[in-house]
Image (cartoon, one colour):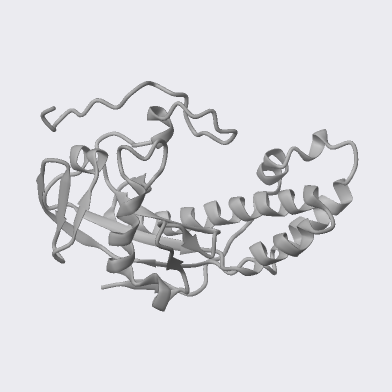
Length: 228
């Protein structure tokens, strides 16, 4: 059964957010940034849609689900197991914040950038809230598999079309998918939560030098269960 969450409480960790925004390093504009943090609370409208589906079988790099859908991805096929439950999801904070960012950029590109970063933070907190709900239901910690994350080779961004077909987020929470697999509102995220023997972190297998990477690059992913 599809679960729709119309309201997610997003509590900012002030110290964590200040570190992410590098507020202490600012020579000026601290008051404006602090004001933006407060303003953002009224611009964030977190919603989510997710469901639980059983993995029926795994063949090659394809994972077949109980509803007849098939997810294609080397990392999914290698780390998931038949008969386990997985949780496809889409989370958004709505369009108010990104609309404010666009207007703010006309006058102050720096503050627009800061507000955009606050939006990223709020979206991450919203997703973590859904993750906790899933972990409680599944009774264990889960890994997050996001289409297109990292290099996109392990779980391609085109797989978002399957997630959208399963969850119908356009109808349920107002998130639509473009022909290029981009989500609108932009501050939205999709993926699959699943219990795994070892936590999957896309950054481990991605050489991109992102500012907010979660783990050091360890090299190319080598499947353990799929013959190559």
